[in-house]
Image (cartoon, rainbow, N blue to C red):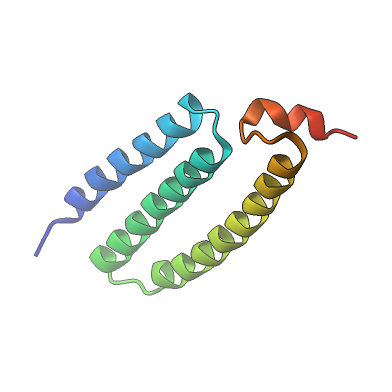
Length: 100
């Protein structure tokens, strides 16, 4: 059996990659993918801790996080389509032009 600490190290790296990608990149699609990576790192943490502590509450919480991530992706991609239709660019700096 793999120790829980290995899963926590894995999720630390996943979350760090997602956070760095979100901060460093200006492409909206890549930023959305980095948010998804960070949410999946949280999911792996919850599953690992739920398995290590023998609690099923963490597994139920993971399903809620997956639902929130799906809603976030749908709204985010709708905003990307709107941005692309208006400016023909998908960089974060172009969102200022959608103000009114």
